[in-house]
Image (cartoon, rainbow, N blue to C red; front, top):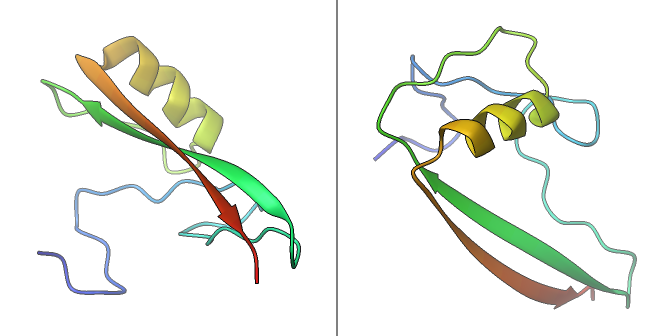
Length: 79
């Protein structure tokens, strides 16, 4: 397990949709319903990216190199 708040040495932290790095939690407007899509990829190789890779860059390489993809959609209603 990776201790909370740490990033493994071989990991890359990409720029997220908010223009920052790291995890950004779901943030629907209060009372709004929002659908999220969780995607998990499997690879048979180590993927390498430049330090300034965007989430779109990662998605492009993931789609091309993935052996398989699992997807789960879920809806959240913000408090």
